[in-house]
Length: 313
Image 1 (cartoon, rainbow, N blue to C red):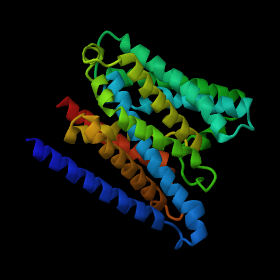
Image 2 (cartoon, rainbow, N blue to C red):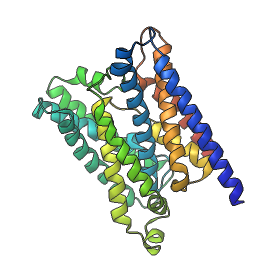
Image 3 (cartoon, rainbow, N blue to C red):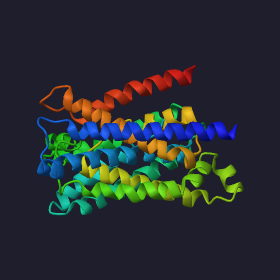
């Protein structure tokens, strides 16, 4: 019944918005002391914005990649894009150490885009697209790229510092060091504009082409959006796993795969998940802080295992 579906979507969007607003308030109030105006402007607000935008961007990237390769277990961390962005950032730091964040992001973007194109080319040549085989291939592909990045860091005596930069940590976010994540806003707007076309990508190349979609051009646009988001995230806070994997799957299980209707819920849920992980990381060893890469990895890993068990049934 269309009316029932519309009412359920409206209720879910309202609940997601309420949860997101509550977590934003909790994030602002979480800390060692009541924030004064300077602390709020210089630290708390930048951190809140960067966490929320990163969660939105990674979850939207996940759903775009899943539509392109037609596999529900793919995200930036299982497609090689995030590992390639690390390598690009390392090369930027060694070849152009004085480059501004936007210049470093350019290196990360180029490597991430090439890696994502390579992953899609590998998947398209696989004779059978097993539901688990595709992310396994992606993990192997990413591990090779990560090994190259670590070898490069070792050769330039940057191995230890690289682990700290790329762990996934919002504690260094202050005014003037996070603004690059604003690039995620137009990316999300473009993703919503192309939501119907990305949904058609999930039908497969032959079906999408027969419906009048330029499959290759739409997939290229999707990979560009993904590469921009990944590179902005890597340059700002490092690698954060599982957000782009579990959030789109949980939303799809409840509301289907029509992105024009579900993309706002995916975005709000991704931001809420990352905000919740950030708050837990700030409280679990208070007054010390656990990097969000670890808390998101633990929460996302458990949810991923539950999804695999549900799929096997």
